[in-house]
Amino acid sequence: MALTKQSIVEQIQAQMGFPKAQSIEVIETLLEIVKSSLGSGDDVLVSGFGKFCVKEKKERKGRNPATGKAAILPARRVVTFKCSGRLRQKVNGK
Image (cartoon, rainbow, N blue to C red):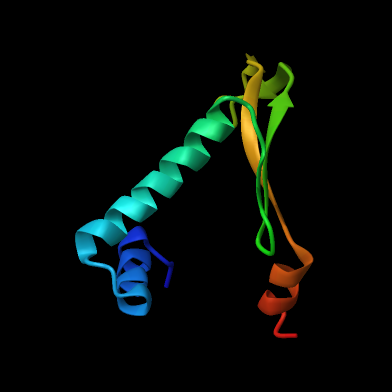
C-alpha cells in the first residue's frame, strides 16, 4: 500500500500532537516549497533522505508505438531522485 498525503498528516498528528488542520498546513507548505524550488530549476536536497534534481532533456526522435509513425519529442525538464546512502540501507534492511 502506498503512503498517501492523508496518512502522513495522520502520522504527524499522532506523533507531534498537532491538530489536523495544522498538520495539513505543514504538509501542504512543505510540498509547495519543494514544487516551487523544482519549478524554478533548483535541486532539493534532504539530508539522510535524498536529492531531487531537475534534468534537461533534449529534443529527440521518437515513435508512436500504436501507429509506428515517427515523431519529434520536444525538449523538456524532468525531475529525478537519487536516494541517500542511509535511505538505501534502511530500504535494504541494514
